[in-house]
Length: 344
Ligand code: KG4
Ligand code: ZN
Image (cartoon, rainbow, N blue to C red):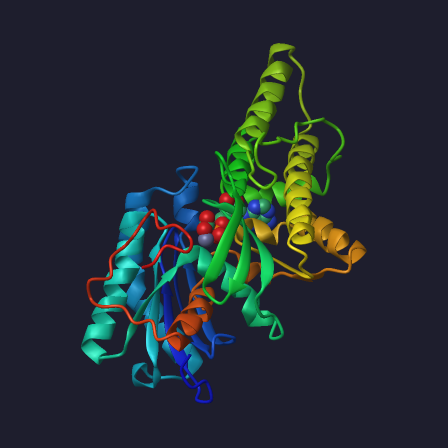
């Protein structure tokens, strides 16, 4: 690794889905600015993210958001040691906007360019508010597009223990929310409405994936919720939205908690972190905090604003790549299906 005594300041850019985001981060853990321009209101009209609209909006916003991140940080572009950008996975058109903008700024200024894996960003969000957290630890990454249980062996070094076989956890939240009339984005709405419901009202299944201790499957649970709603309709009965939400959420939380604790114990680790949009779910945080406390496992979780897509997390991940000497050329491309651990 390179000399770490000097301050390393990174301008980070994230446009993998529907947030146009830029941040300035010092030494991977000090966030000087974290600007997020959300497109949620726009996509709500269509009940989900429309990729073409997302790309177009990123183009409109990206320069403004990058300038705002520098202004809020009280920095100039020439103060930056690197520009880190999410290059995958994500929506290809959305990723391309951030990657192209970062390449253009890097080319014009001569500041080095670093491509960052989006999931690595989510995991690294934990370093920002937990100055003492260092690998190795186990991390549960649960977002709209991904559900992974990984061992973070070192900075940028991962072993994937389990992943979803079908829907990601966030995707299941969004689909169930739509089915019970809560609309988009579903996760935060289910979280809120569940507080009024009984989590034991309906016995939804906890899926087991036969040959794996750590893989997840959420499509069966989603179908069970849809079947329940259909059967209520056929019988001419009304259903309690809050009870369905709370019972569904409990089924997801039970499976995520059970698999996570099993992984932490099997790996003989004493540190566990969560990441991704679903990591801001209050029931999940409570269940994991309790399970960790009972077993004397240190539990780390980012604030909700650092769980959902943001650029500060990309600045955190980019810093550790910078220290390793990673620099990318102007042939850096958007990689919509980039796997965790795959070289960029
Ligand atoms: O990490 P993220 O912002 O984007 C991706 O990389 O996918 O995650 C977005 C996902 C959405 O599916 C959203 O419904 C879910 O995270 N989410 C939540 C909560 N807040 C966001 N799911 C459950 N409870 C929440 N409080
Ligand atoms: Zn994400």
